[in-house]
Length: 468
Ligand SMILES: C[S@@+](CC[C@H](N)C(=O)[O-])C[C@H]1O[C@@H](n2cnc3c(N)ncnc32)[C@H](O)[C@@H]1O
Ligand code: SF4
Ligand code: SF4
Image 1 (cartoon, helix red, strand yellow):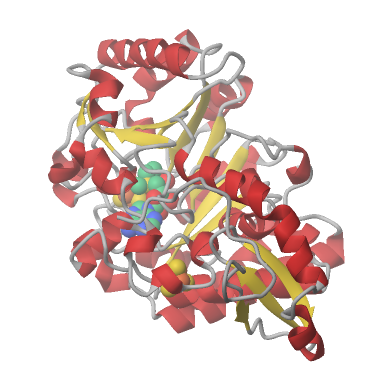
Image 2: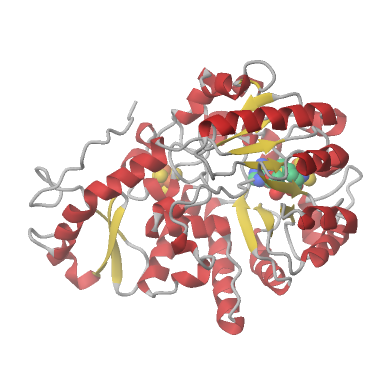
């Protein structure tokens, strides 16, 4: 296994030989610049195409700069890859959902016939998490509990009782399909500063209905848009769009719609095909990349026209993986990914999984909160399989120049669809194109338009955003 050593990286007089760094060049699709990357440390520089030979020669400014920074970059990567502790729980208070989205990674029978967690167990669980995090996190760092699911608001009374009782112990979030976010729910949650995520896949009702619909096949757009209208003006809300073959051609319209509705943060997540049913709506990698980049262009145009940003957090995270790796907020594009080490997920019966994505896969159950606790799960072989999946063990990722900007996601998908933890995941091109786009933005000094204000004052952040 390729676990990194934290010894100082090789420095030397010549690039690519002896003790010199292994530099790789990337065509970023820019008229003037190429990117030069030392992948192990994630060190990078933009070099004018006509100056590449000079930059790679002995004594160059680039080489000197690398030799100066390599040790601190290595330390940062070691911290990100091996030094973080869990600080967030995706807490499923119910197995049930009132919708039947075709790509959902929660198995259909569970969503249809599943059970709620009782209020008593929910309160007991939060008490156990408080005890655990009091022991493991430094003073002043508040852990996050994100009520997730299935649809957490189907078990609203228990969820709200937990939020009320532990208001000062956790930063709470609720990820909802938006159909049950009525005025009183929004008043309760916003009044307690709870982060609210809602899901919407398109601005048009017809497109949205293809992937977000109830058990009778009816769309739910009207209700979700009503919830969005109620949330306007609140800082702590965000929208997740799941990118599929059904909506990818309409992402730019969605970005316009979200911007117009003053959504503070969005995620345009590519669909994960961990469960076979999601293959129905799996987009073509190249097509999805093209449409996603068009949507990024749209967000830039809207920023120029209005002065207001719509950060697309999954892309912002890739930009940050280049500009300031420790400021990342999502942990899907680092290897090992954040599953089972920065966060984990809990089913309503207390079963613990490395990430929500594994919740339908019994063989990844690492323990149970009520029997063995978080410590037991963290030490389990099931969590170890995920935390031990390293990009160095995956072909072709082990030699890819952008391996620490992409992270070769996702272990659940790699394992279920491609046969093993050492398999590549999916959507390689989607990550390639985002990294190339990010470097182009940096070359043109446009990156600020894609990052939330204040990103550079939070480089020690332990706050992880909702990934799914
Ligand atoms: C599983 S749902 C749970 C919370 C709530 N029911 C909702 O829809 O927001 C959380 C998010 O995961 C997304 N999701 C579900 N299955 C997915 C998949 N296979 N790939 C990517 N995202 C997925 C949903 O679209 C939603 O935004
Ligand atoms: S994505 Fe959310 S709303 Fe859709 S079926 Fe899954 S849990 Fe329900
Ligand atoms: S998935 Fe593709 S882009 Fe990502 S590390 Fe692997 S080879 Fe590189």
